[in-house]
Image: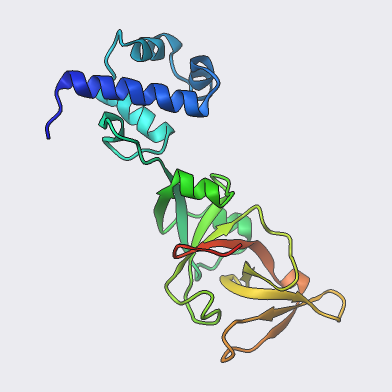
Length: 214
């Protein structure tokens, strides 16, 4: 169904108002945090000026919306975008990983993202490249890793950086002071005893192919 220009304009105005009210205390805060002109935003929200395509793209970017979402009269599906990296990348550190250009980007609904208590901008997706953690994590699965959850808890699975590549392992403290045991879920792979300084913790897997891992 083709919407009239007046209907589209009204949908854009109403949706913008809803989003501002949902995520900001006021129009002034919305403008200040996003370097926008207050008088223009006030005219948009009051209906005195139509939201053109240039401003529309700005709002879609600010709220992580798909193109055309603000034109809709039904509920907007807000999304959160996150970067995806391969396990093999000759990464020299976690900081080096995070400053690399991602292989691609994926997204999920904002409501689902917030249900998992994740922080926007502090999540990366890692494509598992082997079956060492099968059946918990299988080759080819994209694993969302919470960068904030990087303190070792004995027996939990973590994404780690070792020998310039990313891997997933259960981590246990060894009886030998200063050492860790890296344990795969798949019994075809061997445990590893490593010094703590040999690895860097990227974070803890939070979401795997629709399954909540925490």
